[in-house]
Image (cartoon, rainbow, N blue to C red; front, side):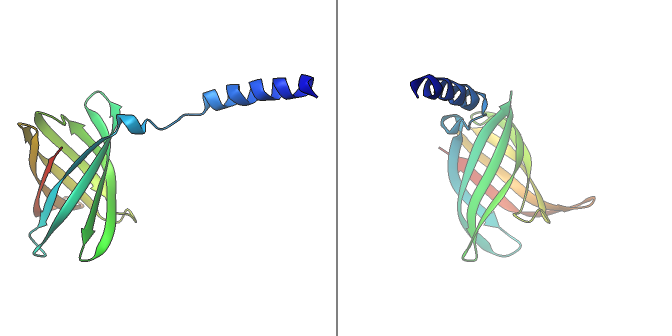
Length: 131
C-alpha cells in the first residue's frame, strides 16, 4: 500500500505546484471617497490593485451606491505612490464603462471619473484614495 501512496503524494504535490495561485499579499488596497456629481451622491471607496506588469494593474473598486454594494473592475496604468494614474473599469454586468484619471501627490490620489458611451465621455465626479 505504501508503494502506491508515496507516488500518488509526489504526483499530487507536483500537480499543485503547477497550478497558478493568487498573490493576495501583492495586492495594494487603498481607501477613500467618491463623489457622484450627476446624482448628488458620495460614499466610501475601496480600491484593490493587483500587479499586472510594470506600472500596470488590475483594479476592483468596491463601494455602495444608494444602499447597494457594487464592484467595478478593470485595469489601470501608472503609479500608486507618486505621479499619474489612469484606468478603465466596467460595472458588474459589463454594460457600463467608466474611465478615471488623476495624480498621486504625497501618497494621496485625487482624480476624476467619467462614463463613456461610444465616443462620448460624460464627467460623473471625483475620487480620492490613500493608504
